[in-house]
Length: 473
Image (cartoon, rainbow, N blue to C red):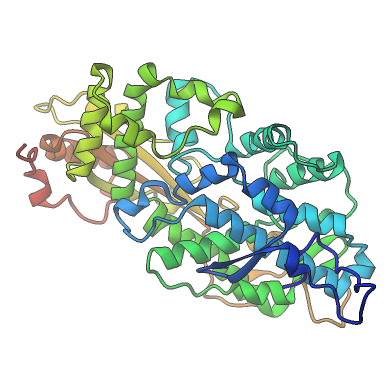
């Protein structure tokens, strides 16, 4: 996968004919997904810090392990995996087109560090922390783990006096946020390098390659997508990474596999129920622990990780009693009850507005006495990375290695079995109180009839679930 030093093949030693072995200056580890990985000296300067080691305490899939027991891998190994794939990708481009593209050791090192550090500012419990918890304790806040990663990188460099030039640091940070809307790179020169780690152009990047492979393995699921084929066939044309036309269906599998993971793993109804309970626990604990105050400065933020739940659970402080009880309910599998769900009809997708708990309350039967705090509604959006659009329309292809032209390919030129719709919207309803499953389910059905003129859910809520009571203590 290329050399393992600072991004450039090292010269031969003066004392003899044997080539200089870059592995002398690298750390060799074995990854359960990618096999042997070599970490260069510059990477180790960041890895061997308490801020990067914090990633060991952040489960990649948050609370998913409560449903998929094997999903206990962390953002630490994911970051090493992205580092290695970024290194592999840029070395392949350098091997086949290095002279043509002017790829230098500076470029190689920058891409590798971007892969390594892209998640160093991530919050606890996967994306739940920034998408569910923070908006409820800080109204109107605009905070992202990508932006915190940039702050954390600067903090690590200053705190540990890491010798890295400002130009490299600037480009590393630009590559990390390259996929965010409104973010632009400082120079269009070698813009293809920004497609490797966080591809804002078409969504194909080594971050996805790693987490799709790693997550499916951890959850015991099969994976039809082979990222190696794309790594082996990619080519830069007009400053953009392009792919052979024959790999169209391979790329489609990338996006469809990601969507399948969102549906069956990341947004699993029971995973979401547990997430909702942890959010409630964190909100109730926030006044005492001041959790949200840690997000402003990296010097405090790096101390926040998934162990916050254990802190709450083992505390004896009176102010944390409600939070503690919620965590113990999770341990005893007394979780919020998933009542039912429906997929928004295709013809209603464009004008869909998020359903709220108030919408369900207003649809309850006259003899019910539901309050808004009894009901939780989640609006789940699953797509192929481009909303209601086909993401493959943004990808450039080439015919073969004798071709120097890129083009786009329409779905119907490949297969008529590919989807005509690229987004699902799923509305789910939960209740905090198991005794209210029947009342909430009825209100949910009434809402569907009122909104769509029919029940769009697949089946009624099971009768045995409607008869659930609190577990005996």
